[in-house]
Image (cartoon, rainbow, N blue to C red; front, side, top):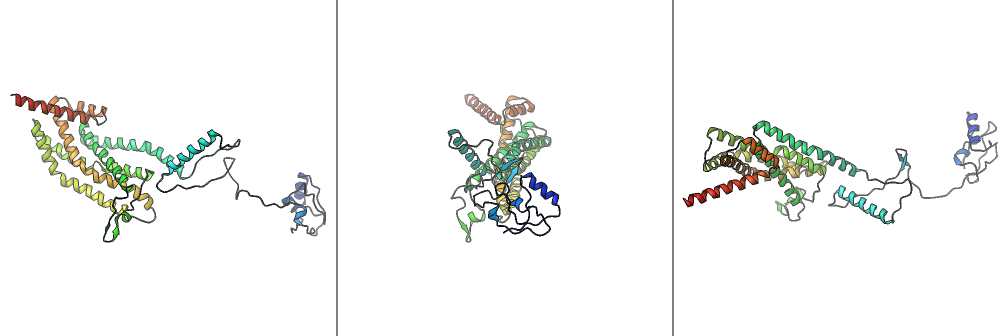
Length: 365
C-alpha cells in the first residue's frame, strides 16, 4: 500500500498530471491505470489539505517479474553491456582475444550469429592496454637501439668497432629468448637443494611475450654492451701502441689483449647477474610483473659472456681484412652498415680464403 500526500508545489503536480493526460484526483478517487504508472500515481493531486486515502497498488499498476539488466550503462550516448571472460593458463591475453575475434567473425560470416541493426561489439580491458603498449614498444625499441649505437659511436669514433660492440646486443637477445624457452620446459630446474625446490624458488612456469618481458629486453640492451666496451677499449689501446703488420701479429695481439680483460668482463657480468637473483625469486605483490621483466635480462647477461670470445674474433677479422685489402676503415664501416652486420661473415670468408691461398703459395714455393 502507498500513500500520496499533497505537495506544497500544487502547480507542479497539476502540470505533471496534465502532461500525461490524467485529470487530478480528489480524495478517495483512483486514477486510470491505463494512462498512469506507479511514479505518477504517488504524485497524485489531493483536492484538500488532508491526506489522500490509501489505495491498493494493484489498482494503478500491473506487477510482473521479468529478467532484465542489473544496471543500465551508456558510453558516448550508446547503451553498453559487458561480457566478462578470462583466459586459460599458459595462454597470452592477446592471443585469446584474437582467437575470439576470429571465431565471432566466422560465425557472423556464416550467418549463425546475427547482430541486430545498430549493435556492435568490441574487446576492451587488459587487451586494450596490451595492444597500446605493443604499439608503443614497436616505436621505443628501434629508437633505443639507435640511441645505443650513437653512444657507442661517440665513444669509439669508429664505425667497425661500434658494430663489433653492438653485436653483444644480439648475443644477449638470444640468451633472453633461450631462458624464456627453458622456463616452459618441465625438466628445467627440476631438482631440490637442501629440500628447497628450485622450480618453486625461481617460479618456473611458461612465460608469454608480454609487455613486461619486452621491457626486460629493453633494459638488457642497455647493459649488454658492457663487456664489448671493456674488451674493445683495451684492444684499441693495444693496437695503437704497436700496429701489427702481419696476420700472426694481429692474432697474437688480439689474444694477448683479450686475456687481459677476461677478469674485468666476468666481474661486470657477475654483478648484474647476482643483482637480478632477488628479483627472480621475489614473491608477493608486483612479482607477476617483476619476474617476467627479470627473466630476459638474467638469461641475456648469462649468455652475454660469449662476447668475450665474439668481440676479439670479429676485431681480428676486421684488422685482417684491412691488411689484405688496404682499404680505409670508413669503407669497411659503410660495408657493415649496408649489410646489417651480416658483412662480418663476408669478411671472415674473405680472410679465410686469403689465408688458404697464402698457405698454398708457401707450399708451392
